[in-house]
Image 1 (tube, rainbow, N blue to C red):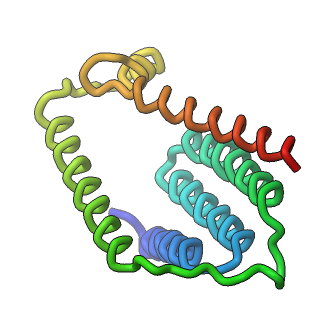
Image 2: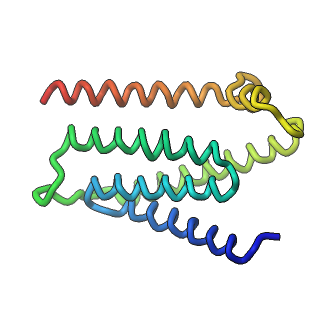
Length: 171
């Protein structure tokens, strides 16, 4: 059983993740949105550390909070001129966005639930796995492997970097 202090810290971290996530998508200033995203990623890393996933927490800070947010801020500063003279964003299709968000959330929940059911029923239980077993399970091409999504994200990040270089050269 966990202590009361541990439970309180968990709820503080969870509340920070929720608050900074909402602030990220509702602020009108793009640099503040990137800063709130950074706080969200740090809070997620804190949650990993609380769950004793030190490696995952370190990767969260190094890759996402360190690299991705710097890339976002670099891209923002290259493509826009943030400041007081920036005009407010206008949204003409709120209903369409809301329907798309609800549909995406429904698909995400369905994928999460079916994946959890598949993992609970079809994948073999690993007791005391070593790093080779974990690496093969995560980056394998078989059932339960994540090689294709991993490669898709790496291609997406490469396209973002190339796009940033192209935009920077045009200025």
